[in-house]
Image (cartoon, rainbow, N blue to C red; front, side, top):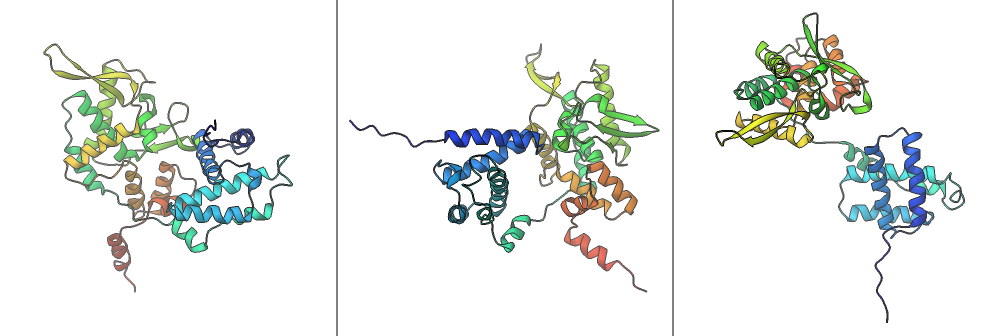
Length: 338
């Protein structure tokens, strides 16, 4: 009797070498776990293409067919570019390992390429919208604050307007990270107690928005202290909804923080849609301040760069500071030539 066997979904030799590469990425490449897993996923895509043959099957012909296969599958250019980069890095490492030095031709790895125009297209993107400060302030002032939950959400959007944090930072900020010195408020962003990209410590100084916007944050901090929250507790704690004595739903604050970025996005969506604006994610606030900074002094622009946590002013300008077409026209046409 002939038994149909399922096709292999892994290659033992490949798994062993990928385990070594994973250790290499962590220890030598100093990559975080999220980046490591993304790289391994791209490598597995290649394994699926070659039907889990050993990596020594790689050659120029396989490279060409693999790239054509991704285009035939109508994958995005940005995904193809990321995939090729991860696979090339892996193969460049692999051809130096014992057992593979004579089996993988270094020159064949260069066949993993797309055209120059395709690379440029992959790097390009659509224009990214952002709110004006007038829209943000109007939306915040439209938010209710008659309950603890309402105060929390209003303070959250207000803090984002003042600091333009990354969403993981906004979700994990603690009471002790909100600091006042010499009459100025700032968030001390620290990887010791917050989820911070690249583990960079920085001070994020409040943008001087109207006093009521700043008051939303300070008032919320004072409310948490009043009900017994400690410095290491979250500034934006999670809530639980239960029936009260009158058999009505009542929101209560928990001692732990919000777990999901989706919860944060839903709060912002409800805020801006209710105010009659298109929903743009919380990250768009970083574009708002970067675009505003371009119209101010070079010193202010550099201070905003530090607020955003960018090592280079080029990142601030190229990734966040693209002007709208209207601002572009105004900037050029309002210049007076003598």
